[in-house]
Image 1 (tube, rainbow, N blue to C red):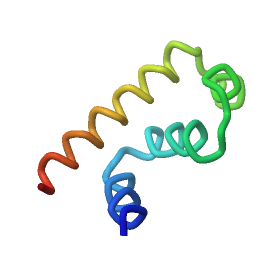
Image 2: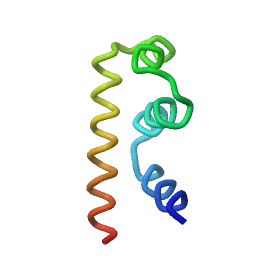
Image 3: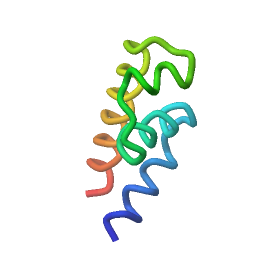
Length: 64
């Protein structure tokens, strides 16, 4: 059930946010590894992760 809720919330994120969130939290890559894979700076990857977490928190608040 929780997995379904998280899955729905993740689908609400922009595609790049989903990709980076998945690589970090499900595939277990580091920020530096993700940055290298995607050709982005580590700070950019960190920004995407932070934004994704904020959006997921907002989505969660709306669902309660």
